[in-house]
Length: 242
Image (cartoon, rainbow, N blue to C red):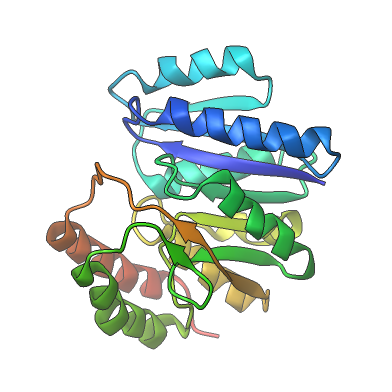
């Protein structure tokens, strides 16, 4: 099987080199063991720093790295562009992972091991078996549990324990079925993907993950939290009920 992993990168010059090195080393070993083939699609997400040069340097060492350079920002836009690019080649599974390596390649491989009997597999920090190597701040976990998750259930009927963990993987046929309907370019793009999977009666498995919270988050809890809720309401208006 061949796996395509999109890595959206917005001003990640200080972290992207280490992330690519670890993922390449891990998956090269899997390739040599005839376990799986792979590619990494790094999507420059309106970068204004030296991220592109760092990725180009890594690309010189590995033919498995592909680069997309987007002028417009938005994590959703970057992930969708990566998915569309992956469909141009014979990839069996298509997913994404955050550039900060909060999800190490070993943890992403757990999704690969689970996905053959499902339409998709998503990493979860909040189900039995998950290991958080740095406890998440109280306000992040309980804010999600008491406010964010019930809101998503109310609007979309989705009941996963962790919607925002930055590691998700889908079968090729799943992405082919939903990619043309993906409209969210920034906030809540992963909610839209999961909702479109539900509408198509695809079965998505939540997999306990190993997670390492990273410093340097670009998110503001209050300001970006408001943007997230606004985007969820807009998303609800875009897609008709069942």
